[in-house]
Every structure is written in structure tokens, then in C-alpha cells.
Image (tube, rainbow, N blue to C red):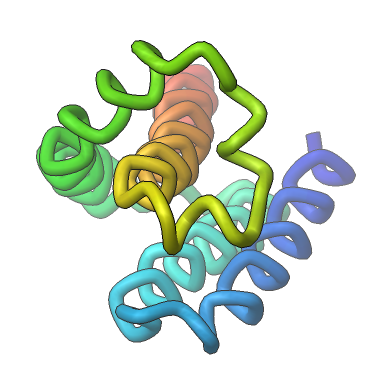
Length: 120
């Protein structure tokens, strides 16, 4: 698990770095930065459970904001628009779906960290 947590920490740091050009960079750098810190802590088997649960609740609540965009994206015939750079300017739901999926990745990792903390 140490290797997995290391890889996740590096990925979350990369995610945070690419948010610099985002319309709302501060919130996403904080979201992904917090995840990187938690993954680094997990390498050393340190799991601040209350903080992890707090972030989980916060990320789940924040992801609800993006649900309308995800529903709109799911209704489209061309799902590949999610990976098109120009599409995010043409279709607002593309950015919402991307941000929702980013939060979903964070939520999954937080759930795994909670499970690991309870086993410890």
C-alpha cells in the first residue's frame, strides 16, 4: 500500500499543478493538495480519521453541485466530448462532468483511507 499511496500522492500533486490555469484554481489546488497530503500521511500509516471523514462529507456535498452537468453529459450521444479541450468552452456541462469525476476520484480514495484506518 505504500507504493500505491506514493503513486496517488504524486498523481494528486500533478492534478493540483494542472489546475493553475483553471477558472477557479484555488479551490481545486486545495482539494487535490489535501488529498496528496493524506496519501503521504498514509505512507507512514498515519490516518487522521476525523479529518478524512470531514473531507469526505465536504467533497460529497460539493460534488452535488456538479450533478446537473453530469446528467446533461450522460444524455449526450458523444461521451468523448469529456476529453475534448474545445468542448469545455462550447458545452458548460463538460467542465461540470470533469470536476465531478475529479471529486469522485477523491471520494473513492477517502473511503479507502477510512477503511485502512479502521483496520489499523
